[in-house]
Image (cartoon, rainbow, N blue to C red; front, side, top):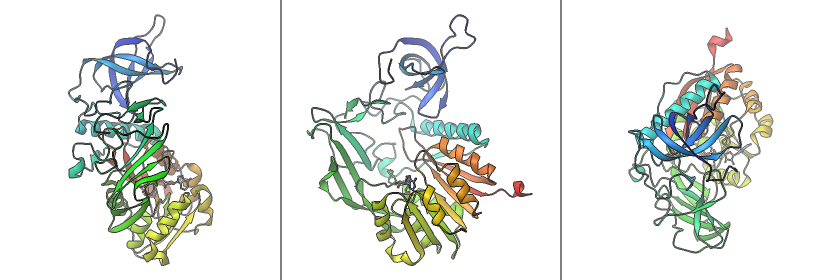
Amino acid sequence: MSSSSRTGPLLGPVDVGPVAHGGHCVARLEPEPGQERGRVLFVRHTLPGERVLVRVTDDSHASFWRADAVEILTASPDRVEPRCPVAGPGLCGGCDFQHVDLAAQRRLKTAVVAEQLQRLAEIDWDGDVVGVDTPATADGLHWRTRMRYHVDADGRAGLRAHRSRDLVLLPEGGCPIADRRTPAVVDRRWPAEAELVSAAAASGSALLVAGRLQQGESELTEQAAGRSWAVEADGFWQVHPAAADTLVGAVLDGLQPRRGERAFDLYGGVGLFAGALADAGCEVWGLESGHRAVLTARRNLADVADRVHLRADRVERGLARLPRRTDLVVLDPPRSGAGKQVLVALLERRPRAVAYVACDPAALARDLGTAARLGYRATSIRGFDLFPMTQHVECVAILEPDRSAAG
Ligand SMILES: C[S@@+](CC[C@H](N)C(=O)[O-])C[C@H]1O[C@@H](n2cnc3c(N)ncnc32)[C@H](O)[C@@H]1O
């Protein structure tokens, strides 16, 4: 069976155990004759404590199988009716938790962050993943300001199924987590197999078809942290409308920047954290691998250009050309995390504090484990639900020199 197959055997009943990183829960099949323990299953579309029948979707791994819960025999009190008609087994892979009450989604994410931190970094975390709802997104829908759709051979727009290239056509009314301001793509025919980018910002919206602007402006303007930010319609900007302000707030709270301090903004995008640090009076050095993003960031921060030095380079390479000393660091890497090489090069500069903005709690936990071995400990870790209905979660960890280790 391939990982995209939806027609594996129906098994169960199984009793569903805890939630795990990746949007599924852990369960076990009954042991086969001669086996001590049953095979581990990673089951989607279920909740801890449920009793379900499952259909195996991927049996290619020796140590576990993947499965979908296709019949719920005993439902969790946290189960709700999905708000999207194409959420569910074998359907759209965009949302993992449409069947879960919003407050319970946040409890699941809290459990995942705590488990990853404990298992990979030996950190006991007693925080909570909190919502960042705005009036427009209060029910966990209509928050996604950047959508990437795919078009089938007949010209209809859809989203990919989970772990598959199969397209699931959008429901009538479009994707319910898309910000209402993003241009609609249902009920229209598009060039076959094209990719569509539909984006909205404070200034307006844009639609790109196969990389070409079809509607709106190719450069949008966002408002955050007391500034205006130009962003390419298909460039990186935090997707939840409340995300940029929330993350800047958490970073500044944690770092407490002082006028005249040196700061690095690594993986800087169009300059969000560099701008916040410069506005707090710091002299900032930034690295970002995207050339277009760096040119835009320089324009965004033209008024503080005397104290913001931005370079288009990969962090792994560019760090060697940054000053040998810094007081503060913001790290906002992609899902893979910063990694040991970057952390070594940074922490040997003995910064006063590091703010690590992380979209993957596993990568964060691995990097916090590395930082601990390099003499830095997490003095605060906050979790934010910037991606309702999905398994994704954003964390901001503050690292400081571990005085107890120094002695
Ligand atoms: C999560 S985004 C953060 C952007 C920015 N901090 C913000 O909040 O708007 C990560 C950024 O890192 C950039 N990037 C990815 N890998 C990189 C690398 N190895 N070195 C430098 N930048 C990288 C991406 O282009 C992207 O802009």
